[in-house]
Amino acid sequence: MPKSLVSIHDFSKDELLYIVKQAAAFEKDHRPVFKGKVVATIFFEPSTRTRLSFETAANRLGARVVGFSDADNTSVSKGETLKDTIMMISNYADLIVMRHPKEGSARYAAEISRVPIINAGDGANQHPSQTLLDMYSIQKTQGRLDNLTITMVGDLKYGRTVHSLLQAMSHFNTRFKFIAPPELRMPEEYKHYLSERGLSFTEHTELAENINDADILYMTRVQRERFSDPIEYEKVKNVYVLKNSLLKDTKPNMKILHPLPRVNEISADVDDNPKAYYFEQARNGVFARMAIIHYLLDTNR
Ligand code: CP
Image (cartoon, rainbow, N blue to C red; front, side, top):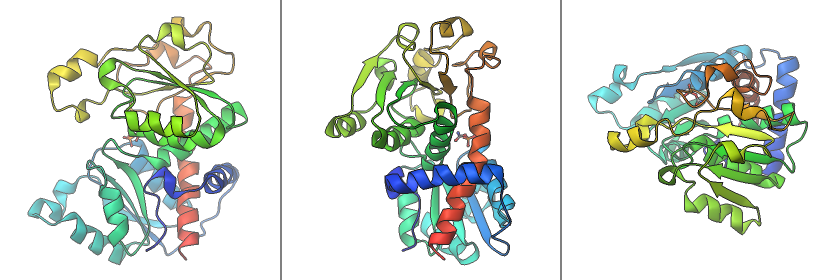
């Protein structure tokens, strides 16, 4: 079975650090070393950043890109199974980037694919390439990954980006703060994961009084698409709104990250604050994804 990136656990601490270092190298310079290779991007859920930055990364490395952004235009709409879809695409491409709404779908695809799979998000489970670009953004802005306070805000229950990031940063003696309404608290399994490793975390419901010690303020969107009951979504959708006025006593080098898209959780007035880093963070995605594609194509050569 080829080496894939389905969960952040598929990469060791050394591999995570290697990707972060390579992302920096690709930001400075890159050559089209994968001419003749084909990368497939198959997205069963909407995406702007992840799909387009993977496609940009593959193009910059010299690979060609095939794929789809809407499964309704494929034979999935005729009833073709995920298994058969993956069997077909692994006949054509050297690497597959897949987003799918079902948790576990990427692991299943990796078990049957002839070529590496990169999980570009599987339901509320994992989004490991987002985590690697988040780590690169943290390293770039803080100058280190060790001994930081990361405050995660918003939908910590269904947020796959916070689940992957928490697990990756557990290698680096991180102090975590979780700010969420009771309905969207960090699931027990992730808190247990931290406790088992002797890492500290605290939980809060108020935003304003809990962000001044953060090195990284990781905002997330309350995701309408994860709620089966629209009334439950309406209750929590605007629970936190970050405004400039809330940032005045935060640390001078604190940076605000957000995987994006945002809805209302960061007010537009924050965009010009030097602490806002989410647009640069998204740009870093191209370099981190170049590093991931390069590593997996090289490792599986
Ligand atoms: N961060 C992220 O996954 O964005 P997209 O949904 O636009 O890919």
